[in-house]
Length: 351
Image 1 (cartoon, rainbow, N blue to C red):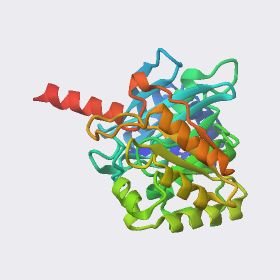
Image 2: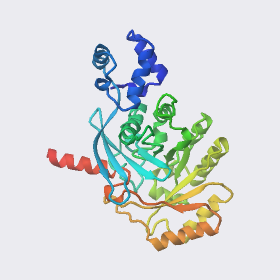
Image 3: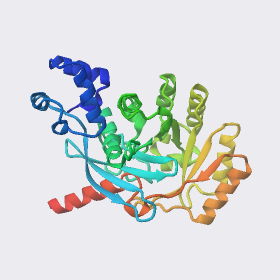
Image 4: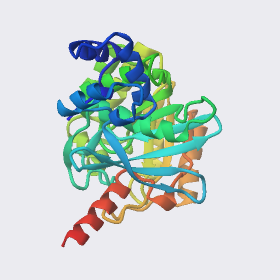
C-alpha cells in the first residue's frame, strides 16, 4: 500500500508532476492530507487524478479509527486504529493544561518481550511505515482541532512497539511531523520512549534528532533487569546510562528514566539506593510509574506506601523524580491492552 502521507511536500510535488499536474496541486492535496481527508474527500482535486492515483494503489492516509473509548475519570481517549492490511494498533490522547498529548504506536506488536507489557504478548508482527505513524496523529488531530488550534500539541512514541527498532520509519516520521507546511509539531514537543537500544540512541543524537529521550530502565541491577526486560541480555545498565549521557551531552536535552514499580521485585530500598548512585551527577529525571495490571502477566503495582518510600529515598538523595499520574485505567490505558482484547474477541467470534 502506497501512502501519500508518507511523502514530504517536495516528494508529493514530484509525484504529481509525473502525473502531469501543475505545481499548485501539491499544495492543495497536502493541505487535504494534513486535515485528515482521503482521496475521495478532496473536493477541489480533479476526479480523473483521484481515480488514477487510486488505480495505482495510492491512499492518502494509513489508518482509520475503528473504535474509541473515553475515560469517565479524566477525559483520556483510547483509539483503536485499523490498518490497510487488517492489522490493528492503538493510541491514547491525554489532556493536560498545556495541551493534548497523543501516544502513538510505531510497530504492530513488539519484539522486546518486557514482562509487564501487553504489546509484546503476540510478538512483533511488522513495522509501521512513517505514513502509518503520522496518520495516527493526523486523524486524531482532525477530530480534536478547535478554532484553528491543533487538536494534538505533543506526541509521545510510547505505544505499541520499540521506536528505535523501527529507526528509519520513526526518524522520517519525525521529519514529516515537524514539516512547516504540515502539522508543524516541533521535535522538541515529541518524546521517544526506548527500552535502551544503545547504538540507536547514539545514532539518534549523531543525526541531529532531539526528541525528549525517555529510557525504560525499571531496574538498577543487571540481573534483576534481565528478569524484567530481555533486552538487558544485550545491554547492561551501565551501557544504557552511558548512552543516555551521550544523548544529553550531544543534544542538551534532559533524559527521563521510566521506572515501573513492581510489587516485591524492584521496589525495595536496595533498588532505590542503587538508582540514586547511578543518577548521581546526571541532570536527568526519574518517572516513577504505577504499573497497569495486565492479566496475562500477573505482575502487580507496588502499593502507595512503597511508592512513597521509594520516591522519598530518591528525593532525599537529590534525584529529580515524580510519580506519574495514572490516566485511562478504566479504558485499558496500558500499551497493547485494547488491541489484545480486540484480537481475542475477534478470534472468539470467528470460532
